Image (cartoon, rainbow, N blue to C red; front, side, top):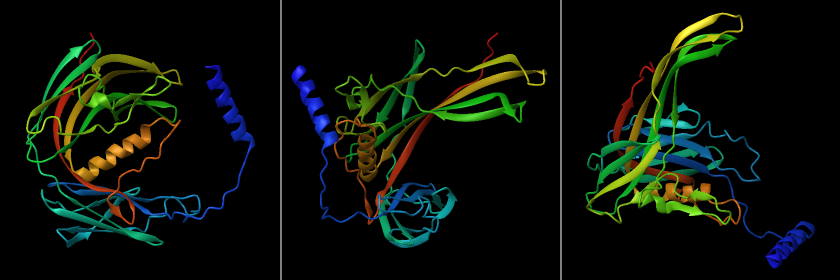
Length: 323
């Protein structure tokens, strides 16, 4: 142990006190368009457009305001992408399963970026069994794979929270409602997805697959049960009160209800490769970090154009009186 510490300190000391200059002969990378888009059968097409930025780029980060996106379906022009928010676009195009979708994005000062995908086919409905254990809700998600080809999936679990209570505005309390989304799922009990947890040399556990993507390699043509758990939603209804800054007492009924959304998405291979490599890049330990190349199928750009088909089960937890 003493030798290891001595070498570590020696390397650190030398690294801090010695400097060398190198004549870089390579090409300085240029900024490129970043396109993230996904298509789903019988649904609107959505996309996000931005740009990468290198240390030699002095332009504003939001310099893609004049970007123009064109959508082609089965190699035929189908319409334009319309701006609906900050860097967010949509199109009225509603593709069918098996359609080829191509998106071309042009922006002044940057090369045109092009990405294509084939819209995913459907897959059988999923089923959900639940039971409570301590303060957690145990989920058993039944997924049936058709097995006609290698399939790719993604698990998404969302907890939608509805709260009816006090909102402060200009020092005064008002009754208001708010909606928030949280994402907290434990997959340690699942045989397949728990293998994506690694332990660093410092004993810290890291999930290198945070987007929870997986293939049908181990259950092709069969049914698989995914084991997951989430914090049990706490739904309630109670009478309460609050004193304002003016000394007034406001009495009101506070309510909180939840809606659990369990989704399994069938995704295409480009979207699978993108999310899997992106998860590794984002969650690997910052120390001893190895270079990770995030997958992209966007020509002359970065990002991904993919497709998915979504199956969803919803569970509601209505507000209950605590009396």
